[in-house]
Image 1 (cartoon, rainbow, N blue to C red):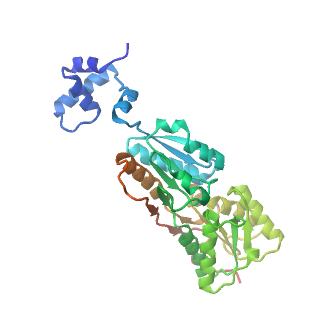
Image 2 (spheres, rainbow, N blue to C red):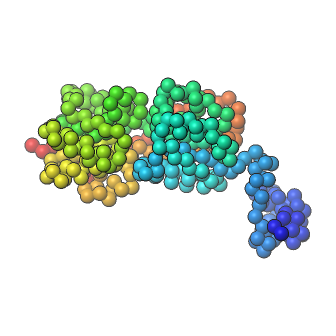
Image 3 (tube, helix red, strand yellow):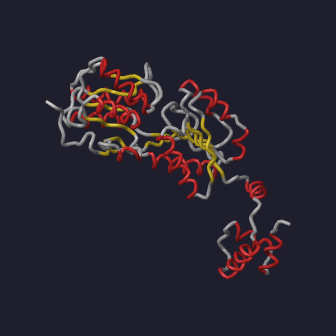
Length: 342
């Protein structure tokens, strides 16, 4: 027979209500009474009935996180940061992978599995700005990423344009003038690639450097293999460049490998900068200079914002856009002291 509250109360010599108050961490309990109940719980091996508790409180103690692809290092690190922040708040996280497919993202928003959670942190990739009305859902949700802006939910994201402009300005300050892009998406305006390309162009304009479309390397998914392939294409076209801006670290690492295979020295011949500050960036050879876009802050803020919405449903607070700070992490692939090769 499973141990019950009655059993714990009988062994501790207190009421069932007192046992319940201890389990729910009610503050106004004498320390000796709390200790007696906790000893009884430990001795009997009592575990609370979470289903019953959730029915009483209206909460499950779980949140959902939907991300495109755990195979991409950025999303794996983001998921780990969200899980850590949720655990600090006493929550568990159910992780959903959408593969960045619009239909899967739409199906997720209506999934009955979400009834097992108190809210959703959602990073769409397949959906676009045209789908903004579909984010009107009957449960608390916080949106991440750069696919949808000005929606009906809170949005926690990074400063893509400003950060990409800063990355490009960093290369220019180091004497680079022919800066190739690896990772652009054809025709994209809203989205990480489009926004980071905008920041790149703003930096060129401010420095009086003409934009050259030949320097723009396009690809699809931001995997290391695509960074390598795009770099090979640039080299095969005999495009002259003295720096590379990979629109994420994974692309930059793939591109850097191809540069080294081709005999280009990094950073002496070609400086390389990435974006995301993945853990692996500091261990590559040479270590990768990159933009730290504040992903830990994004994770903590997303969890805190979702909890605020869960705790105050119907509060009338207007949806907010919360932007992370960023910084340049200078490493060996583009040290600030090394200018362009002459």
